[in-house]
Length: 109
View 1: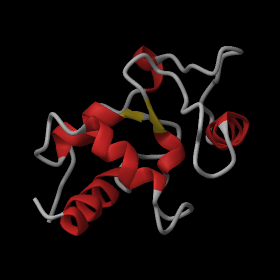
View 2 (view 1 turned 180 degrees about the horizontal axis):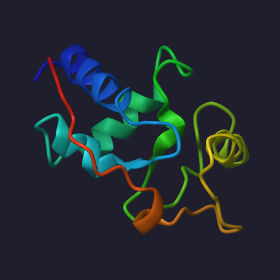
View 3 (view 1 turned 90 degrees about the horizontal axis):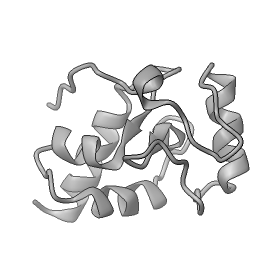
View 4 (view 1 turned 180 degrees about the vertical axis):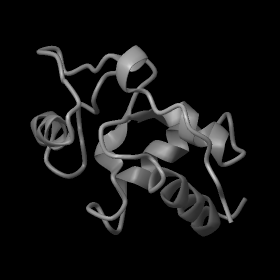
């Protein structure tokens, strides 16, 4: 899969995650047909060209932890953005995946 196409597929899938929900890097990789590419998903999010339109703040790791080096302001900014959407962020910068993990399907064109 070409890098440009890969990134666009990541962004397209992520745009489908509603406010108040989160996804994991691995979940996005699986959704775009690249189940072993969670790290590449992270890189795609790090160079996100439209941080507001493409809600990279809704992505956490498999344990529900926020990104320690969130590209658009650090963990505090990511936590604030999630809290604005109704996601409870714990003091250790994690979210409850049982409560907030997006369980819907992804449609890729």
